[in-house]
Length: 352
Ligand SMILES: [Zn+2]
Image (cartoon, rainbow, N blue to C red; front, side):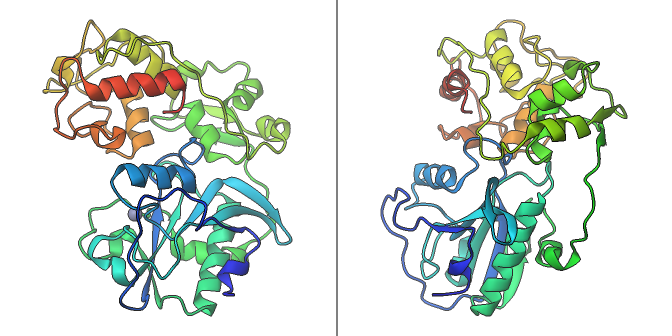
């Protein structure tokens, strides 16, 4: 057995994850360990090896595109301390799909989460460190590269997190206490902040900041994390329940759908998407939900874009949701639209 397979935070799901077909065997050795992130915020229900596996099957792939997935939200207690769980998804001898023309010689390791918006937790950094060290001992690959350092992918915002620093994390760890407060930055929501903080929920933050109106956060405002941390206990594994909408699934994006999305993403709930520009997407909305203001973009769209891994500019356009929701990718919205139906269905389920 290899060193990496012996890590106490590793679970072997090679034979239990659903598959649709088989990846071919490699025809060459692994030279490169390629580090990815998942592009969806780590606490979301789909941010697991199983979630990626099922998503990749919808793309027509045989199964999860990565060999190993580090689940940032699944913390396991090991003799060495708390660690993010590693799911062994595909045998390392398989040529899975994660890095285009380089699949044949690359090992794919993905850390769940969106590290354009979040920080790696210590438990995740410790797992990255131990996994990389074990892979080196096993002589699985010679080089470590971020996704965007591989040929043809310089445009890709992956893996974003500082993987080289994470490899040294355990050597560098000194006992230090996490900060008790946080200064609000542009575009922050309580939901986003909770997501950046191990074991803190939005409810904890609301309790710790009784005087703070979550819909009116101001840049520079300082909020309290300390009390939230103390009251949070050990709820790392709980999948936080999200509000469920009760929308008619008619494919018509009007104020109700916007409100459902705002409720889900924990932004101001007024049913209005403000400050948009006219294009062939925004022109197909119903009612008064789109406001063509100064074109500076809207908070709920920023939150949506951040969640789905699109460019975060707050402006709805052809690229924002269609790709992610897995409907026909034709870069426009019909009236009514399949992609909006899918969005409404997911908002109703609360598992968007
Ligand atoms: Zn990637």
